Each structure stands twice: as structure tokens, then as C-alpha cells.
Amino acid sequence: MIHINTQDQIPFEHFEKASRDTLKYLNKKFGYGTWMMTRKHEDQWVILQVEGNKYGIDELTTLTWSDSMCSRMVKGEGPRWAPDVDNVPAYVNAPIYRAENIKSYIGIPVCYSNGNLFGTLCAIDTEPVDRIPSDGLETIELVSKLLSTLLQLELQNIALSRKQISFLPSQLKDNETGFLNRLGWSLYLEKEESNIRSVGTPVHVIALDISQPDKSTHSKDTAITALFVSILNGILHDNGYISRLGEDIYTMLCANRTEEQIAAMVERIAHELSEASIPVLVGFKKHRYGDSLDSTVITAIKSVRQSV
Image 1 (cartoon, rainbow, N blue to C red):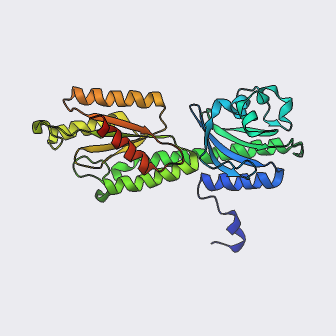
Image 2: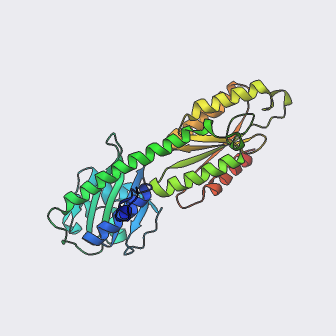
Image 3: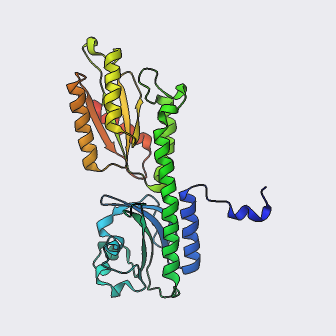
């Protein structure tokens, strides 16, 4: 039974909502001009959620991780709370110090379950700030660990969703290949757009054209189609999904891959399909935070056609 006195304690729907409410709470309790939840991917530093407009930082802004104070904090070169940044040489030497006029800093690691770094919960101000109580840092560290715990649940749910493609209704799948059709692809792109806003999923889109002048090896051949499907599924595994958008045009959404991994994947696709006598043209595009996924897909497909 739901009681009116419990309504304000209903669990958060997702990580993004938990993060936003946490940043609002910390901003109200401890001050600081801007609080942020961030994600690190390679040398990209993505600002996911922001509370406070003192710096005018937009959400999904991408900065350089190695330029940040947070990159120095996680290496132990500076403290998690620096009420006066000018007293911390490692932070003064960070390029972001000069670019953003940061005089006070808080940074707490946000981690995956294996201890690897996801990103940071951090705060900055244009003036030295010394009003945090003696146990304030412990409070912020605990809050950060709780957010890390919620994050793991969100990431698990996202991964599970990607594995459920085979269980989707036939209306969302291509009859010949079992890949997503245009409708299924569109629905899953909406999911990924939400994932990007919430947890900053890094995404690449690979496009393939297997149109053949020799109709004897056309993709409509049952054996060729089965082999093609097997090769692509074997390469992608569970970190994404594949769609058939045209007679011989396919797209692959690849999540959580590095630039090096994507380059290796593209090379492997071309090699394995060629070995199977299925010539292919391949293009790809890294998704830029703040862009629409539709525009990334269009650019990836154009890159294939321009290579002809």
C-alpha cells in the first residue's frame, strides 16, 4: 500500500535523475559555483550533468581529460578538496586552471565495480572556498560511492537491453537476417540517445555496403546471407547491435569501444567478409556528444558512398 508520507522517498527512476538531485543537494549544502558529474573515455572528459551556472558549462561538453584537475587528483598529485587551488602546484599547472579561472576545487572518483575509473563528481569556484565543515569531505565521498553503486545498476540494465535484440518481436527485425529493421533501429537509437545523456556512453557507427555486381554472390543468396550474419554477430558480440537499412546497406552501433578497437573492428570486418567472398565497402563515424545519433548514422553511410 502506498502512503502519502512515503511519496518523497520513492527510488530514483534512473542514474541521471539520482545524479541531478545529488548535485542540487551538494550545491545547496556546500555552495560552490558549479557541481558536475563527469565521465572519462580515453582522453575525453565529458560533462554529463551540471548544477550551477557560474561557469556557463553546458551538459555533454567534451573537454580534454589530461588538462583537468581531476586527472591529477586521481593520480594522487593533489587533494580531493582544495579550498585554495593556488596552494596546490599540480592544479595550478593544469591547463584548465588558466582557461577557467578555478580557485577552489573538489573532486571525488566515481568508479566501476572493478575499481577502474568511470569519471568524477567534482565542484569548482572562481573564489577560494573554506566553508565546508570538517566532515564535509567524508559526506561527499560517501555520496559519490552511492552514486557509483547506482551507476553499476544502470550500466547492467543498458548491457542487458542490448542482449535482448534476439527476443524482440518480428515487427522490429529484418526477416532475412534477424538484424533490426528501420523501425527497430529507430527505437534503439532513442534508447542510446538516453544512455548518452545519462551515462555518457561512447558510441561509434559503422556502415557497410555489400551491393554486388555479380548476382551469383548477392546478399539475397541464403547461404551468403547466413554467413554474413554469422560473421557480423561474431565480431560485434554484445556491445551494440546491427540493422539493415536498405537492400545491401547495414549499420552497426558499437558502444564503449576505443578508437583503436574500432579501427581493428573495421579492418576485421573487411578481411573476414573478403575471405568469405563477400566484398564490402566500410565506413564509420565516431559520435560526437551533443550531436544527434541520426546525424552520426547519416555521416557514416555517406563515408561509405564517398569511398566508391
